[in-house]
Length: 207
Ligand code: FE
Image (cartoon, rainbow, N blue to C red):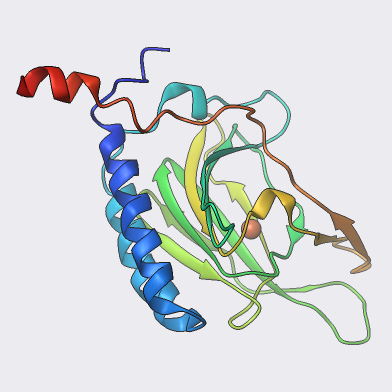
């Protein structure tokens, strides 16, 4: 595990500290939280040198989601999404606020409006998100979307932040032709987390 002592993990450690402070400060003000959170996430994905390889591995068949951090009170979680060539999510909701920041490659995001009487979700025009771009979702501003890797021959990676322990939240996916809702709980691909706290290399340098 050569990444354990990477000083570059300090970027992620700093982001988590800043985001924890932001959540403390914002309370129930979701708009203030996501507005400021966008900037923190934009700074995190502006430089692609910190994500350990273990959390950047695509799967041949399905996109992967690796938990990088969950707040001890489950107020927010940070997840690395890794998309193999051509991989995509189903149409889905979140039920909490979410921020998506593209770290590597490019992604195509399509928002949907659910029809009150049922029927197929109505698609908005697709948006191309290149590395460095950040977008937000939530029940307040539009919570239903689908994301795909925009690259046909290369993995793409995005860092997502959600207003809860997203892998354990009861959510829904929607059939594109009928709008039929199906419950799902996403879980995570990993069983261990990046070690943000081995600061021995820095400590040794300072000695
Ligand atoms: Fe999503």
